Length: 142
Image (tube, rainbow, N blue to C red; front, side, top):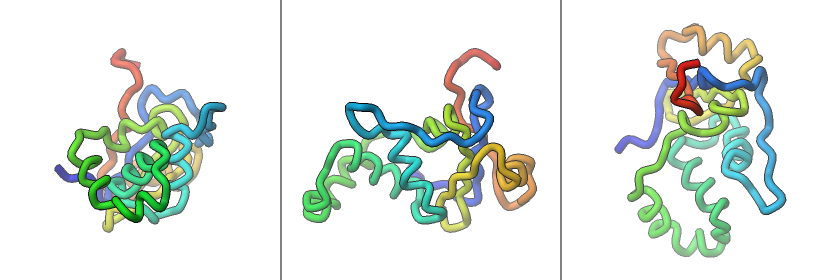
C-alpha cells in the first residue's frame, strides 16, 4: 500500500461548511486527532502523510517519547499493518476548511481555504499537481 501522496492537492470537501481555515480545538478530556494533525501539519513540508499519521497516532495514544525511542520500529510495524484512512478523510479538509498540498517529495503543507494559494492549487494553477477533493462527511449529494 502506498501511504504518501506526491504532487497532489487535497481540496476542501464539497460539503465542508467552513469558509476559512479554522484551528481545531482540543476537548477537556485531551487532545483530538484534528488538533494534533493541525499542529504537526502546520509545519510546512515537514511531514509526509505516512510520518504525520504515525506521529498523530503515537501522541493521541499517549505513547511517551522514551517508549517511542525504544520501540518505534515495532510500534510503526503494528500501526502500518492496519488499514488507515488517508488525509482525504481527515477533519481538516472535511470540517475545518484546510486544503493540503503534497510536494514532489510527498511532504505536506496546510493551505487555508480563503487564501490565494488555495485558489491557485484548487483551480489547477499548477499542472504538475493532481487535485482531489476531501471526502464528504455525508453520503447525500450536496
